[in-house]
Picture: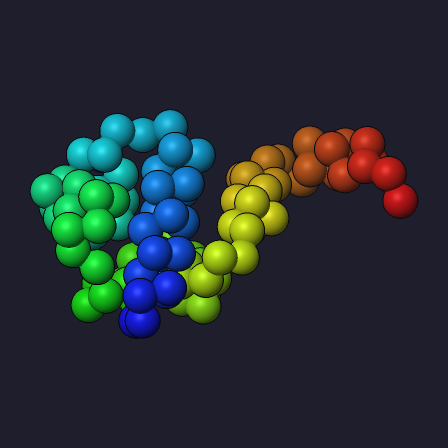
Length: 98
């Protein structure tokens, strides 16, 4: 990863951690890395480059989204919608403007 991609990766991991509502320790387990390594990624001490593909796979996010400044918000919304029961998902989608 180049410097810009590393910065985007760090920002996206921070945003996903915040959106998850989990502690760093719990979220590190979700990512398949140690809490110490996650802390180093978030602080910029380590790039996380060698684990980026594994992390993307664990999150179900294409690596290109994880290492770019594209907003991951739509992906997070999609993930949350898929967790809803079909009737609740349909009800929610009906509230959206066309």
